[in-house]
View 1 (tube, one colour):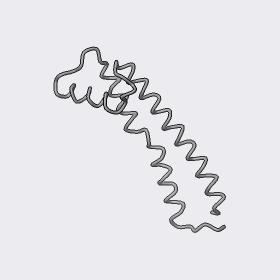
View 2 (cartoon, one colour):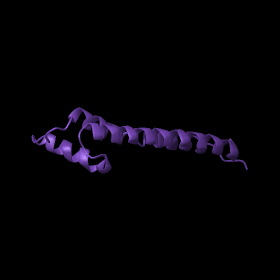
View 3 (cartoon, rainbow, N blue to C red):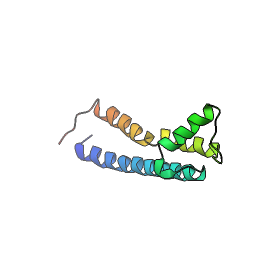
View 4 (cartoon, helix red, strand yellow):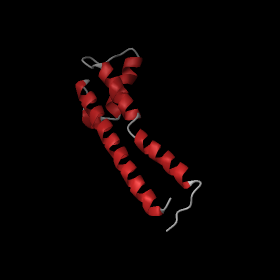
Length: 99
């Protein structure tokens, strides 16, 4: 594989990974808001709500199914980049780029 071929493919796959991450972040913010939490505190607010829930002190008027969805989406937000890194490692490992 030549460098230009790799670069075109990598750029295309990186754009897909960017869109996946943005979509998951947007959906996580939406789920956070629908759960009754503040989406500007996306990382910590759902986490703290679940900690309280697991301790037997659920927050009033919080939809915990939406909190779970929010946390699930956040856990997988950067999955596309990990797939891209794996592809890059497989492609580069056995080949050297011809310029």
